[in-house]
Length: 413
View 1 (cartoon, rainbow, N blue to C red):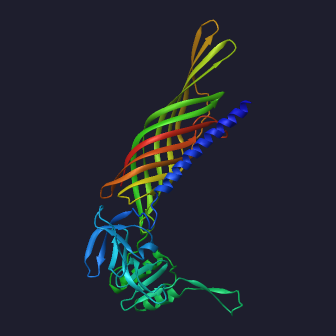
View 2: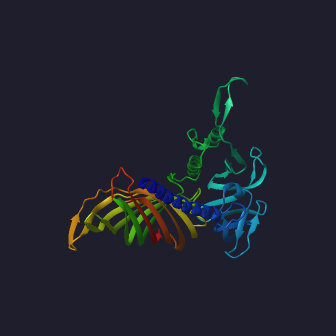
View 3: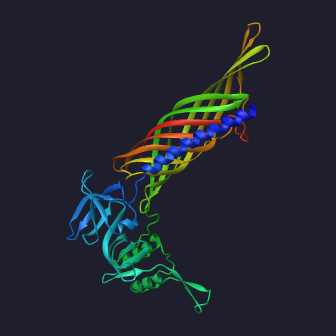
């Protein structure tokens, strides 16, 4: 019967967590901006008119497919949205992220006509990307660098195919005057940008400096705040411990500016020093035992996972989540025990140790708001919920659990 009630309690606990997680997931889905309908992610940028005049304002940050057809622009945050086609402007861009120009697509690239193409690099020759096809502006014409494909060899019934990369032949012909080739260049942004940059350096009589990790952005994070935690431990019966303290830590975030910069990977180191206090009592045959248990824990919590921005990073709510691992630096338990005998006499004893310890693992998720306060400096506030194993008990048995809510403020730079 006792085992039955333990199972029921465990199911209720896990069900409650699943409900909380489902609610948060639904809120995230409802709040995510829908491409092409409720676009709310406008970033500092500009449009270039057909006469060459540049107008600064805010440009919608979307995906390459939408950006090839139109540019959504606002002169300021409160202005109505104006949508430009490739026939109405010569280009647009988002400062520090991307530039698009209106080009006349070559016949090999459907659908023919005028479209916006993303500028990957520019100089003597300019390299564009339109959807998944690369275009080379060779002054007198726009040359399509078509993607590689498999073609049959040995007749229509043959199952033998070869990989045809005609874009390499086009580039090798263009690069003849500098005695360069693109034989080893795969069909990717980084590789084709590098070979065009090398050729431009030759034509412009300047040294070529290879750019590694182009577009990768690294942010450092420093934060502090208040942590409220509750730990349970199955000690003859379930005992609840509470521990509140200040906390702080550092971390890094990685994002790819030339790609989908709303999504970031993060890892942090959070310093934890808490005293968890719990109470246990039990009646024996001829006495009552009461214990005040104090668990002193010092550890480094390492949460790693993903962050998703709902808007532009200058001012955006965000969600985060991932896995957590918490190696202990030190741990000790002190128990103050009172034994009340049936004679009314009370015996007090202080006991050190007597517990096993483990390094908790688990999950975490958070919601916050990020605001840019200066160039390269962001201020943020965040509420974080962490759910891990507890610190006490055997590493082989799930007999201890820890839940904490952290209220954090910090800076990213």
